[in-house]
Amino acid sequence: SLGRINFDGQVAIVTGAGAGLGRAYALELAKRGAKVVVNDLGGARDGQGGDTAAADKVVREIIEAGGQAVANYDSVSTPEGGDNIVKTAMDAFGRVDILINNAGILRDRTLVKMEPADWDAVMDVHLGGAYNVTRPAIKVMRDQAYGRVIFTSSAAGLYGNFGQTNYSAAKMGLVGLMNTLKLEGAKSNINVNTVAPVAGTRLTEDVMPPDLFQKLAPEFVTPLVLYLCSEQCKASGQIFNAGMGYFNRAAVLTGPGATVGEEGVFPSLEQVAAKIKDICKMDGAVEFHDLNASLGPILEAWSPKKPAAGAASKAPSVADIF
Ligand code: NAI
Image 1 (tube, helix red, strand yellow):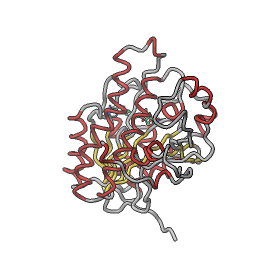
Image 2 (tube, rainbow, N blue to C red):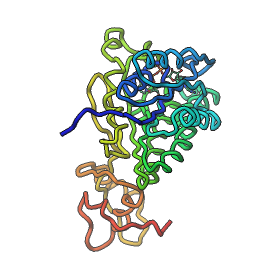
Image 3 (cartoon, helix red, strand yellow):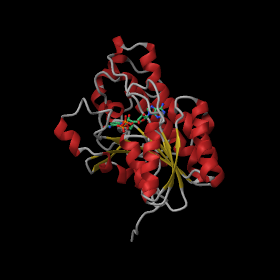
Image 4 (cartoon, rainbow, N blue to C red):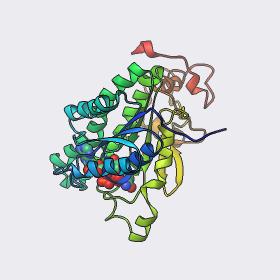
């Protein structure tokens, strides 16, 4: 039976916690016993400027509610900022159990109009920010042999959204970061998961109809994210969509595919074209745990006994090939 989930004695870092989703995560973590580093640059929606007021306000809210929190105003977009955010946690509380990579900005334009500065700013905050903060945090978590890390993706990255090539690339990049960090963190009991939230915040206020905006409070996303941060949760390497109290899991799926031509002979374009429907089939699609598992069906494509779909993840390791 599941009792109340709490975070007593644990230390959490939430980036971009001065508003929106990050604020909601920070308040609930503190309510449930965590000591929280409230990081926020306090800039504009496009990342310009900065102000200590955003982080300070949330720290005050937490303390007034009887919780423990400290503010940090560094930008996640530089390695120095990332180091300093983790240092803030270590100096104030002595450990880091939870890291929620949440800080985010927008610079929406179609690709043709997107200047390098718009591309770089978004990549630097979302993808660079996750690297800059997670790396020093993982060092601490590895020494503690415990950690929970959240990355914040988006439906724009998972599925696509007009005018957001920079944002989509960064948000899907985070999934790749997670896929590999899941393997590197496993032996240290470090679990990493990704949330793609939908919430009414400053980032979405002008793209959402006002009536919907009200129903999309960040607090509808918080329970899943905090569950993923808990010791009880053993999941790692998973992606979840979350909004309005509706949650589902998303994944990269691979179909059973088809072998084309004759063994040992380069197939022709025409042979590929003739089999394209089989190549595209997704019936019986599977998830692979890692690169090695994904190579199983390729390496066994011409072997006498083809593995059944689903058995692919049990394929022998071929790590020594690389
Ligand atoms: P928000 O704008 O309300 O909150 C983001 C916070 O991050 C702001 O307080 C901002 O000052 C802070 N921030 C920005 N750049 C920073 C930096 N370099 N260093 C430190 N802090 C910085 O927006 P929201 O919606 O709460 O966004 C949170 C995360 O959720 C973002 O990563 C966003 O991309 C993601 N997301 C949100 C969706 C939504 O429907 N609201 C949809 C999909 C993803």
